[in-house]
Length: 588
Image (cartoon, rainbow, N blue to C red; front, side, top):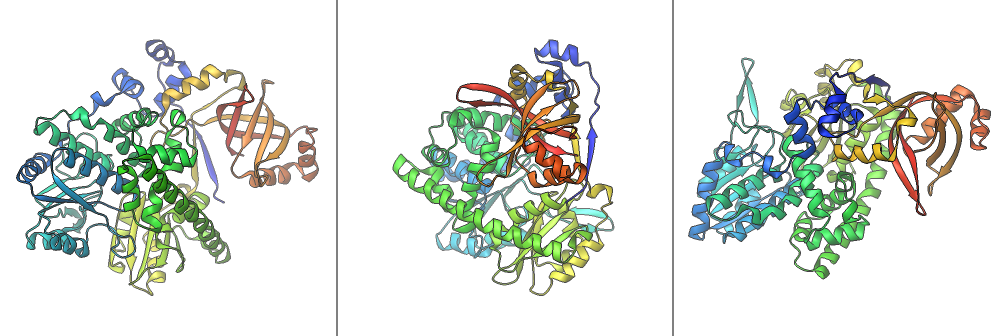
């Protein structure tokens, strides 16, 4: 378990006057300020931003070249192939480009690499397949920026290449200066290019693809609002690829959630139905933890083409079959993940790996598509940058997930000479190495890591202390103005000190949920639930107050048990009766 640092945010502003101006509770104004939203214009955009506030895609470097080329190819009837990636962002981007180009009359098909056979991104297999199929033009999406060699090979074969991507541009350090290496494609559209003046750099691959299709529609004199339905896929990819939900991304996701409530996409309807997600109540949580994992499961355990087929499904019968298959694959993936997380935890505990600043876990038999998920779960548990490595066909492959204070791509770049291939960004990376190199990599990644002890303590940023009496249904309703929540726009964290625990009981199939009755220092009593780390909570109470007091707590006879908690308030409705309930997130 990692140690936590609780930090109370104190950011000043005139919350009363902001509240009056925007007709919101001053506490809501304070929460918005904590998200670095400053000034009337920014606050208005945060609360009321719509697709009319999105930037013009033509501001992206090379967008004009990409649009001119595609117009010419569509009009001349050239064969166009979209080459995506096997994750949710790649699949959504492929779907967006195919829909857009087909609607404009283009001859378009697609190819998506097989995670095991082809590996990530563009490779010679994919280029050879395109050449054999007499493809004139290849458009990459969510990949391509790091495929300079493969793109040069495609050009030798006479294939036109347009890159759309959102990943970091590869660079070399020469005398302490970064020299960026762009692939020599006919057009390279990526907001992360150093020479791209597009104002918002945080788009996912599907959003870049959407911007291209939108610009193409306008250039060809068509009504770009005809493709508004594609915004659903942009929103799903933005959440699924864990982009910061700020600026344009916030607008994309907000818009997508509104549209998903009454979507006409047969595949998404069926997927929501078979996973039990109510379209009217869908949130970013459902995309991130229910729908997204099902769309990703195809690319992990079978082929991502299944998820693409679901998005393209034309009728309910076809959609139901595809949705059912993806849900079954995801259920299977969950079981495999649990087993791998258990094995990783066993290694860490048995070999005292928590003394290392960067965790490198070798699970040769783990399905390589699960490495990133397992790395994420271990990172969460131990709050360390984590790499999970598995045996691939021709070497060791793996994925990493990082913590806020460690730039993972730069970390592996420093060990680049030990790797056969790598790529990624600040918080996640993929890498390959030859068999037998794991120990050398573990040693090098730790030797070059400069994380301090303080940076390895998880920081719990508390928005405000909140007396229980201030938590009303109206306040909880107003909190919805801050949604969608996710990375970069996290759920507010409220705290209360010296909270008295009055009673407890276990709920859930495995008794792993705690239902509690709590009283704050002002004497207000509220119900609370604790979903995670329940055993740690009970152990903490036992260590501090003794087993006898914990037993009394379960009998409702507790006295004198106090803790500090962080929480998020919710309304629990049971048999038509609404009660306010706190969801406990941390305790100490």
